[in-house]
Image (cartoon, rainbow, N blue to C red; front, side, top):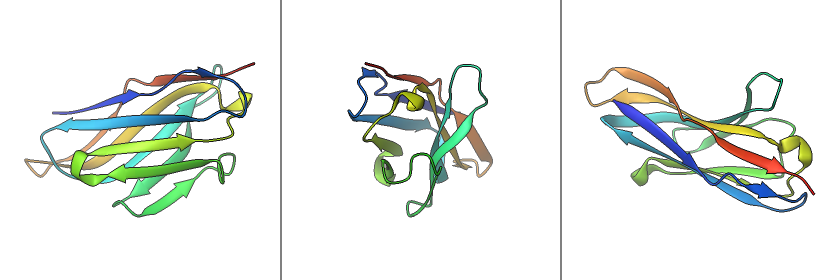
Length: 120
């Protein structure tokens, strides 16, 4: 099995920064895509940023220039550096991973979520 565990969510003021982390563990052969999604109260889950094979990145327009996704492939970890946070960034942030397990079956997993609140 594969598990994802996120951390780093917190209450911050507008303009401040946070870094989220997500560690994937279990019977992993390789991870092809890792990313972050978020869900604000009363809204659908939306893509924030993804990274494919450790290089190609994709960002939501609302976070471009403020958020940066990065990966540590050796540690199966993905990070989301969030700068210049705005109240509209308030949401539960979920980590997502897609790849191959040790038995060469594909997997896709979600983490349990970490809450980010941006408020003065």
